[in-house]
Length: 305
Image (cartoon, rainbow, N blue to C red; front, side):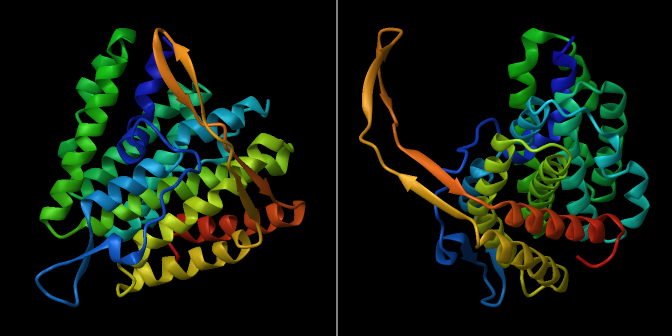
């Protein structure tokens, strides 16, 4: 069944939820983002702010669907090899890598490569066990639900609940910074895959989706900045800063249009007629592609980000 493959995106649902706002990202300032602990020098992202940002991020399924729609064949060579697990030694590296593998699952799922999905889920499970959060991944239940197309809603619900439990567990251990790395890694891998595909075949819709990541990057920078006093996060922030330098050259314009109403199934629905237009040059696409490629290469090799 095609629905079998949906289970393979489990981790993507964990980190991105079921919906995304496709660029309608609510701006959060640093005062909203950070909540103080008992010690003044320690800062932690509030659960509400993290959830808000997670919901604003595009699902790897969305970007992968656009990739497949560009009629570019599946390319296993774009994936972060599961053998790379050996390169990740610290909890920080493993969390970021867990995010990368989750981004890979979106790509694998859309192209229905079940033989790879099992392999990548196993890699994620191994990392989860290393991080002492493997108990939140009930793969037997996931497999059972995925075999029944009528149980997909239950699968998504289970995934969302499990992520919340995992995040709460990490918070209780004062390790919420790992949740941030998982989320960041998933987003970075989706961007990487999109840019690599555009190198193979130009696709305007995919280029526009890449440009829209300018707004998402601002949100990612906020949550990473919360832990900038930690060396790994400081390095990651510097790398993302390189990416921001290129994205700052991209212009995004919001064109407001008065909303209208229409009747749908006997109910009055408000229609948002506003649009967002992006302006990104070929040179900017190339520069963004090069920067995210270099950052990703450093991550998968186990080098400093």
